[in-house]
Amino acid sequence: MKYLMLGAITEAGQQLQGPDLESWMAEIGAWYEKYGRSGQLADPGYQLDGPHKAKTVRASGVTDGPFMEAKEVLGGYSLLETASIDEAVDIAKTWPGVDNGWITLEIRPVMAQ
Image (cartoon, rainbow, N blue to C red; front, side, top):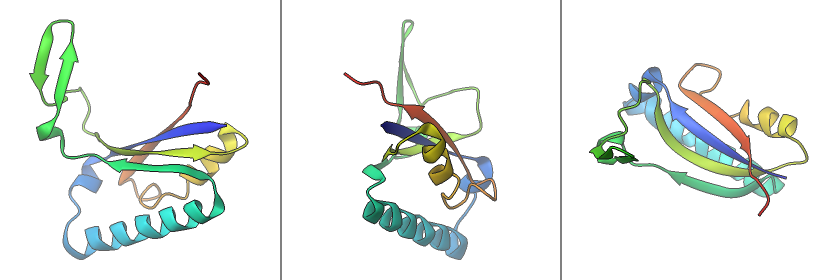
C-alpha cells in the first residue's frame, strides 16, 4: 500500500544553517538512498520552496503565503510503499531530524483510484 509522508519543518529546523544544515541535508540524502534501494520509497517526492512564495486558495479568494496558524512550514513530501501504516510509521521515525524536533512527519494512506 502507498502512504504519503508529509514533512513540516519546525521552528528549530528552520533556524539551522551552516554546518548543521549541511549535516542534516547529508543525513537526508543517505535516508533517501537507503529506502530507495529497499524499494520502500515509491517516489522520493520533492522539497518545496519557502512559504513566502506560496499562494493559498480559499472561497474568499487567493492570498499570498500559506498564513496557517502554525509555526511549522510544509517542507516536502515522499511516497512510501509498505505493507502497513505501522511499517510506514517505523520508516518515518528514522527520518533525520525527527528525534531532535527539526521536522514533524504526517503519514497518510493514499486512496486507491
